[in-house]
Amino acid sequence: MKTNYQQPTDKKSLTVTAFALFSLFFGAGNLVLPPLLGFKSGNLWWLVTLGFCISGVLIPILGIVAHAKLQGTLFDFAKKVSSTFSVVYCYLIYAIAIALPSPRTASVTHEMAIQLFWNSPSLLTSLVYFLLVFVFAINRTKVLDALGKLLTPGILIILLVMILTAIFTLDFDFAPSEISQPFSSGILEGYQTFDAIGAVVVGAVIIISINLKEKSASFEEKRRLIGKSGLWAGIGLFLVYGGLILTGALHVDAFDREISRTALLRGISSQTLGKTANLLLSILVSLACFTTAVGIVTGTSDFIKGRFNDSILAYRITAFLGCLLGVLVGQFDVGYIITVAVPALMFIYPITIILILLNVAPDKWTVPKVFRRVVAVTILFSIPDFLGSIGLGKQITPFVSWIPLSQHQMGWVLPALVAFIASNVIKNNETPSSS
Image 1 (cartoon, rainbow, N blue to C red):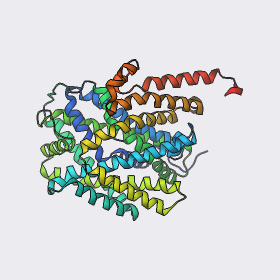
Image 2: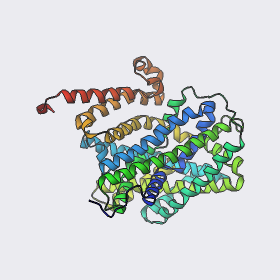
Image 3: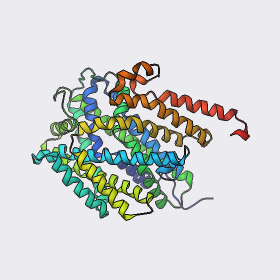
Image 4: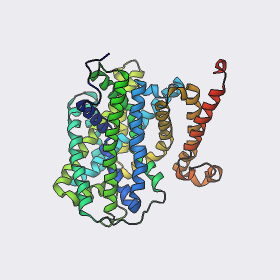
């Protein structure tokens, strides 16, 4: 029986949804990551790009696909493990979001824009920045949402011009790579985008929006819409990230080898586009960073508010503490915050990736027992990578060197795969009464 609904291949629905997904992951703070990665990777820039886009593009898009399947909230991602685990996971995700990517937006703003105009301390920038974030978080307004819709196209246009200028004006003369393990280094650097976390946290908002706009669509039609939109958004992200990595690799002789991430992005922008466009990019990136920070603080405050019976006081206290933490952490430079984030990401990202993949997989392969076993193994084998990230690598190497991929700080991957396969074999061999 036919409905009045246009198929999800309708260009307008597809374009709107794809751009919404692209905007969700196209974080301004992330733009400082790819150029330096390319700058260091040299002739192996393509291998780094593949790794970076696995964790920075593919996994986040699969997170949206998982949300489309679940039609729920962040809590539903881990509830098959247990309700208690899911609550703890939610708290960890929001704590990390408000403690690291949110303050990093202030640091990026200071280094990309404020330093160009005023020689003021980063603490002052962070203080004023999060005072404004607090004001916007307490007094909700749609102004930032409207602004965000304009910022993404503006930044994207400038970046595309910058990338194409570099590709068509510079010689493809690459230096030898300084990165010994380019593929795995790209994957680990992709963690710093926080996009997998963004997918599980904010993805539900995208799904709700689609449900409201496509009321007459069936579940399968909406799933196809999300799948095709995710593919186009993923291609867009791949081209932007890959283009920035290539652009960084092409500028190997133009800058000092110890240049910072933000200085490199500013320098490349200035060389390819000129000072005026560089100034415009800095302002747009700063505004986009601000909208991101407000989104993280309000999202975290909403979560805590929900946990305390919709308490307005809980919302305001969380917003205040989130902004206070933003002031304290945001005064440090971007490189330092990225370094500090590594241990937290080495622990939470493997869990998040596994939860995304398990939720995408067919239900017959992901019963609660499979969830529990695979997540438990992932956590266990993530511990050595976490310990290595806090400087204990040499002490634990004799005990973990036998773990495949441990030298790449991804020792959890194969054990999780084995646990998944073994759990399903055991499940299939169990009698119905014991399952």
